[in-house]
Image (tube, rainbow, N blue to C red; front, side):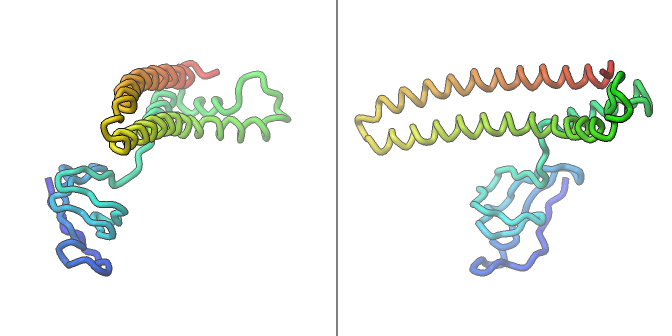
Length: 188
């Protein structure tokens, strides 16, 4: 467990303490830090410039981790463990004429590398859309005052819908992960 004081220069308008907030990293290889001090917009913590305010005790990711990244890595590990260098035949399916190899191999590599991107974007888009809808209806509750009962009911209903969508996304993620691992194990 380490507590780090960032060593950057203070941004304009922030005091020295606010410009270099203290953060906690539980392990040197962690991708998450916890704010010990509130982090103000423009402050730099662990090399990251805060865009918005991060309250004391909240977590920040120091590296973007795509949700599908482990699927790609474990698929490669399992594929190489089972097939060795024959795993590269994954990019040239059996039965493809040799004169089409120059076209098929880049398409297969692009298809293989787009898997974690598609898993990540699907989850990101669903979460963003649901949270945006909930925030809009929650704004109606306060804007309408006493008459805000209808938007309140909508927010409760949307929360239930969000839970159903979360389970559906977990199911889709699990199914696609199984399909990708099956491809790595059994090739084409």
